[in-house]
Image 1 (cartoon, rainbow, N blue to C red):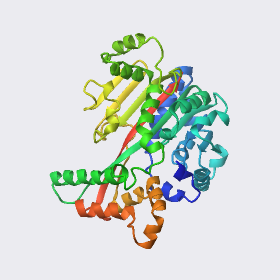
Image 2: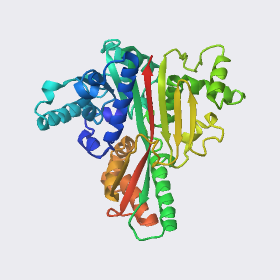
Image 3: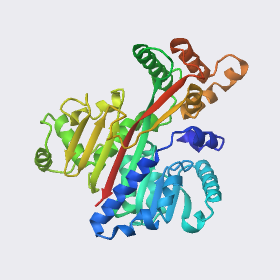
Length: 401
């Protein structure tokens, strides 16, 4: 996050090459929220957000407005917030461009911009004033209990909390005339090269990520357990040596056997009430991310599984094509475009600052060149190679009681 706050960071490049989310996901999110409104208030469907553009959207960690821009069409009021003034400045430009393309936009929609971090939303936003709170690709930068405390404060009763992120990109070659076995081998090698330069080899990006990146699995797991208390309680029981509840009745009985709310090391008690939780995790390569939740499933998460209780459902997926994958993020592109995406990584920019003098003197080859030369040498991926990039993802939707 510190890298993105720098005034010299190229926010326009960031906005151009970062993945965007499909319209189908935004439709799903609005449907989820409207169903909650109708169930809670029994109002006529004609009064929903989709028709009258009512309500308030708060987008946390907005960056350049990647989420706020498309979602703002569903709301009368939109608050675009980010701790980086540099990002907010670019978001203002993107909204100005949107208004130019839609002449009535500024009269139909009220857009406000706030420089604020996700743990302090309540310091600038009225309690019980937000209908939908979104946080895309940013929860891992925040303290889970502080974020949830602040989000819970500003959400209206029945309001929707939605946070999600895309995780590691999985690259697959297409249309190259080789056999499936040959492509499978090349794809495995390509993803190993990605992990080497991005995480595993300390000479490169692995040790240079800002605080949130290496912590994001732990932070997300804590945040998910706090929102989805039945899941957190069940995992705690399993870790304590007790049998894992496998049916809805077992979950209720097990939760009743816990004498006090789930306590976490940070002192946060599971006192915030969310219901209708929908937690979905796509992990195509059975990575370490899955093992964080292995105790919630009888098979350790080796296959696609569902944890269910009265509070909600947790779907663990390994196949990006399943209908349960509500956030499909996939792009067909030339490999050169994937290179431009990697060029937006904050750790790469940190590495370049550290090695600036060596690069300028010719004593150090730029890391991006080293990485993509290795792709060419080992798997024959060059700029013109056709690839499909599919991002793993995690989505949590929940409703404030």
